[in-house]
Image (tube, rainbow, N blue to C red; front, side):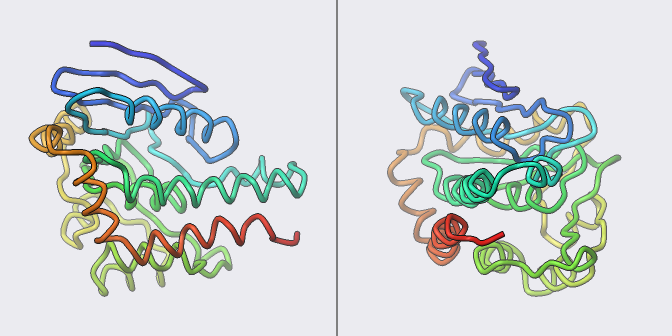
Length: 236
């Protein structure tokens, strides 16, 4: 095994090309530090020579709680624009990542964190603790077109309706029933179950993996990339 860390995000390289990327920044909210770490980790995984697969996880009680609203509230306008643009770019990058990806959801996954989990190819959720939630309906926000496109592309119409309109917190069993996640597991097994989903695919040609994903998520990728551009022109 080989490990490295950058900006609170570690990369553990396992046999078979499995790269476990672990966010270790508390609630793992998106701010420049978190994004620097995630982008560096994805760069490292992309450079793996040979079989590769990505397992994305958090630490403790949280996978990710989305945007760092406290940081955004104290940032200047350019900092807010750049950060929002990078978040949309991160989702787009994950959607078309040139290796199989799986979110090992170790705890709470809210808002933009839930979007990041959806951007992965598969999802495994801890069965005994943690909620999946889009809180926008309760905090007065409408989903921007890029986010709307990805949710409705990834989820069934019923699951998209129930997660987007209600603002409810869904536990692991409900998420599995709705098809939001692909498997659930005890806390100690989440990463291993997740790795088991992608390990058989790690050796498939990377350009083929990426090309297929770009076809599957063409609409979402285009909308998110447009969203990244629009974010740079936002007025606050």
